[in-house]
Image (tube, one colour):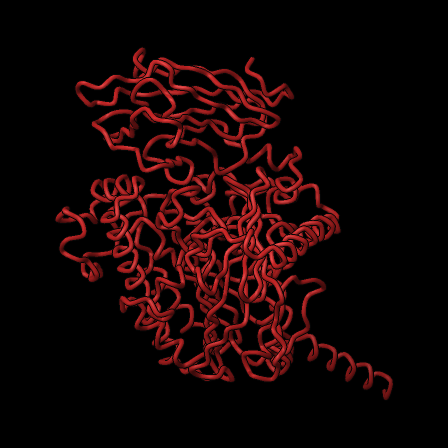
Length: 634
């Protein structure tokens, strides 16, 4: 009888220990001390925020958040666009190490966004996804009893991690799908109302649990289509259109901005500030809900953006309103911590980056760091318990369009363009807009930065190859300029770069003019004959790997009485060389002209070195079967 009694007692104890109620209780007892809300408005450039001394009052709610928390004045993105930046935020790794450095599979088109919108998992080749050997924030927090959720409006930030540790994942398409009920007057929808409403409801349902909640706003990403009520910063003399929030008018503003029209650029800056004001309103509503639910007592909010926006600030090499460079217009982002234990009104000048966020979250939760991180915890400098700077150097990188790497210390920054070896140096104290290359004036500092950057790049390669699936690493393949299954899968099959394009359509030189209706909608860019001081560059965001047919098309300039060039010289650059092709633009206007077949093409160029007016039309790249050939046309 005694033996039977003890057996029954032991069985009862085991059942109790394994019961869900006991497990939940143990988790609650050992759970991290704080909830975390990671708040990420897309494309929010720090120096265009009132919080960071911008003159327009476009961030009243973020101002308040910063005044009650700690702000980093020198926080910089790990990369100038969404996918690699969020890879660094979620993994704590440099972009080349986490590997997600090219645009998403199928451009996050309907095959990806439809499943996400309906709550299912899109079908993506596994070798294109973030390596399972690189854990992300929710995977590191879930084992400690935290509920995890994401409320997201940009497929480019999530497509590779949607299956990775989320209890709940809600997706609102920001631009890839037309969805009834979305507001907005362009192909980009204003998703902030739905993002906020869903986030508020989720917080109400989970306020009794410990959680990690990522809320990503598509706004203030371009186009600048905020409701007219938020267009508060318009100057009457800036631009003649009565309603340039309409899509057609926005197109005209951008077309003139590409010609460095000062009024058009200023108008875009005002519209950008208006869209920042728009998303700031919804951020304020979400923070109010945090207070109303009593979550302010145990919740830390981290506000950071993935990247900034060029807004035509560097026309010589990136004449675009978009973001594809390692200039600070793209890299300088807000970073604000708010909540219990976070000092109020503190502004820190320490260098910080995206890859610091994961180790900081774990440190704030009193959890050990992962096996490897490239970042540093910012907890010590936030709380004032450490006077040691988190970084001596910060690094950033760009794998698309024009691969670049940058390094900075507290004062100087060095940028290397990988294809050309071109080096630029900037004094961030005296030239924050980065307009003057001073490498020759600071030879010792430039040499030190270049040596440190070279060391860093070699370290990236070693570190990336330390993972068993390193051959799938997209960023490493781009850096090493080698073929890979991943690059082959992502290479565009058919790409037309037209005058309405963005970063892939680079006009350089102030001699360009805007003509009458032509190649793509109403846009025809033309330039008078000259010594080659104005040119057009057609290129691709994603590397063109394999063999491509390249064709060009042009229109008449639409200007009476002018002679169009009969010797327009197109130059095709490809891996290993270049070839030029004289084309008579007076003939067969509006038709495609085949230049040839090229392996691994990089760009097509056309200058005003000609005997008449040169028209910058379109270039088409069509991928053939992936066969190794020479770069010369076939």
